[in-house]
Length: 434
Image (cartoon, rainbow, N blue to C red):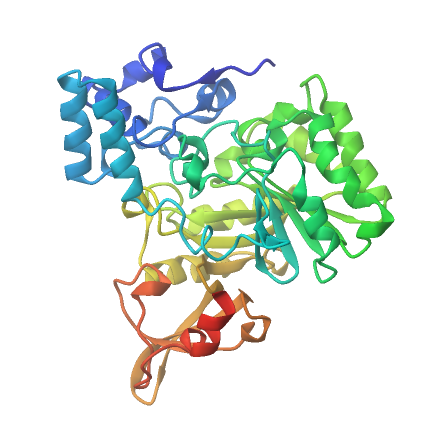
């Protein structure tokens, strides 16, 4: 199967969009001028139920809705398009709106970029002691763009906010000096959009003896959900699988960090064959996704998603809370509701699927899990803990926040029991992230 991409300029050419009203098609176009739009023929032809649009979850996962912008933002862009505003004016308007959408949350630019010889290392984030993220320069796009994606600035030309390795590959020199790093995560964009030889140029140096401290190589990718033919019929599909086998044969662990947002993505013959081929290399597939209103905000959806993952040989890993960026108002749910969905789904599956952790916020200080709601001393509180932290001493240290039925993110929460701030907001935390 040959891949074909559809972008903003193709929205008037897709016959399937005839299922939408003229207002819905115009709204899609308005939002796609602000947030990046890309879909491929596998998603369009095999995943979306066009008889159910605009309510189909896979449609909402890839095609924009009016409510993904605020009414004011939408009206501004719609008015500019209707009066055929000059390109420079439209571009300036769009850039201002993007800047208001918290394009790089959780300190990605200000706190996560490491230094090598007192210079920033391009295309690298190092937030947690053991794990380094690498953004290959040729892996800066995806097979389709998810409408909720927190990496959307990578795709819209905001170069000052873009993570990408440089030609000198300084990340290799940085890793050489970080003996505490055990895990390297190749991310993007999507590294699997690169040719096999390009991906190998990032992975194979890490198989040399000088990087024996790197025990696990992770690849973060949506490819199984959006283009399983990458492992079936693409020209270098077999070469890619041989690269995976080489990593495993070297003695390192290869973790394929896959993204599936809905069980319907697991339903095609192509994805099931692709999963078998990846697992056949000795790689392990772990699956993570955010909880998204309008797409998977149902315990039954998550229970079926986790159960089918286990049946296919994959490991449920994370249920994330939608990040505080981009069109978050459309997708976010209160933490209390997220916890209810997680617990109800968790109760429906066997122990093999209970490897999953959630709901988890990947916030500035670390990965914070909402462990539960309880009552202590007559006060209703959230109990939370760090699964990962900028300071490793924070991990699994429980802390408490006042119960707030409307809170959707860590920054919405207030300390319980009369405390003025959470323990990680102490002076020690400020010094640690400075």
